[in-house]
Amino acid sequence: MEKKKQKFKTLDLVYIGLSSALIAICSWIAIPLAVPITLQTLGICVVSGIFGAKKGTFSVLIYILLGAIGVPVFSGFKGGIGVLFGSTGGYIIGFVFTALIVGTVSDKTSGNLIKTAISMVLGVLVCYAFGTAFFAFVYAKTNEPASLGTILSWCVLPFLLPDAVKIIFAAVLTSRLKKYVK
Image (cartoon, rainbow, N blue to C red; front, side, top):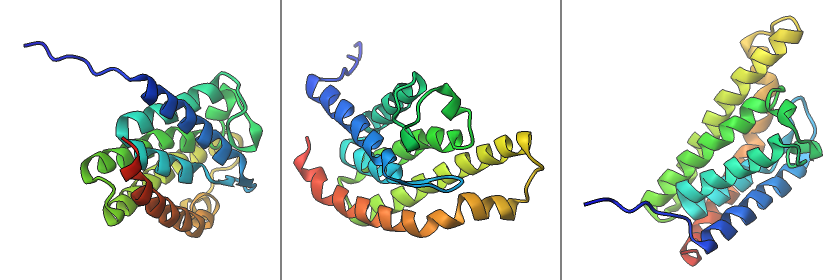
């Protein structure tokens, strides 16, 4: 028996489009640093937590595609392929994996607050790993290579507390809203 491929329904496409727009809006709310503090991770965690792995990941991919073609959806109202190859490009690519992790756990747990929060922590840690490694690579191409401690002090330490607050807010919001979305 041939398995029927599942296609997106019209409502799914609306959710994906609105979710991509939400992530873009969250990226514009920023505190500028070497790597800006934005609400992108909050948006990605909420979207993936509510809509699951498939729609959440597609939302992030659409967001990245829009930015890559020049739509100013990235932090600081930036767009273009150059942003993806710049110092913050690894974080943007890491968003895909954050969405996969949070969405997959969300699909399996039906909005359990603790499991959702743990998945968001793991997702953000994976994003840190991609972003920090890519930042170190890009930084070393134009400057003297910095120590791991220095790079972590630029790319991770300033974000731990803000991301913890965003994760708590996203986990609570997701657990409360997931039951209303089919």
